[in-house]
Length: 355
Ligand code: SAH
View 1 (tube, rainbow, N blue to C red):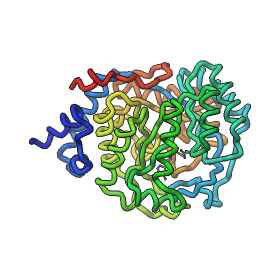
View 2: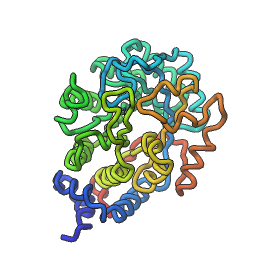
View 3: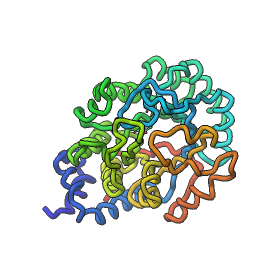
């Protein structure tokens, strides 16, 4: 079998591909160019040149969790904490809808201050703007997930972070990968579109570990997969570690596209942060979503999951039109920003393996 035959195997019989085979592609840099090329072909075939826009509001940086990599972890006493009011959130959502983004993403640390009723009310009122609503607010109860789904929430983003159980424990000492999986299952059961995803380049993570991430997102049949490089934050226990690499992150994105030809994969902000070409390159090797940041500029520098976040200087209501930066990025990469709500367009299993 020639080295490149693995790509056809992934496309035609993904369930038969082993974790070792995926790891071999990840470690072999002579496969990068053909991998990126075929991932781009698959994306163009299944999804065309459309890029979906998801406007994100980071509405609170309070967090009860203590993830070792994250700048807003509860032990980081240097963070200046903020919470946006319901009115501030709604005004920002309105601005997102007026700017041609078909989805509003509500993201925060795990902040129980926003109880089930508050989130339900926010979701209900944003849905009147005729946009899709995505929640990215961490682990909550089944009852809450259900209330919010009934209030109109369409999607839930909860990265699995790493599918390597030991590594999961190392970076979330009080937690367990199986608990994360149970939450993702609950969301699926409630018929949300569910987003998983991982961080690339965590300390002690190897290619086998990343291969597990890719197979996990395939086996879970993720509707969305967010993949970004690890960026060390100086005020965390991992502050002195090495960042994740651009090339490895692109490879994980491209392989994920081969396993999940019709899922939505963002060109992440973290990728744009480690390299100015990052998001454009991601669009060229399988990604089809961009998440422009609409957090009001007064709060934006305080949502520091990691330092130097690229979007800190992207425009918003106070500083003009985001089109100049993000739309330009999409068009110069050869794609088209669309206003659609951007649901996963499932291709039927029978004709889903067309390459
Ligand atoms: N509380 C929500 C949102 C988390 S923030 C939740 O639990 O889902 C969104 C994502 O940022 C996280 O899922 C994590 O993958 C990523 N992230 C956090 N710190 C990071 C870092 N230092 N480098 C790269 N990505 C990071």
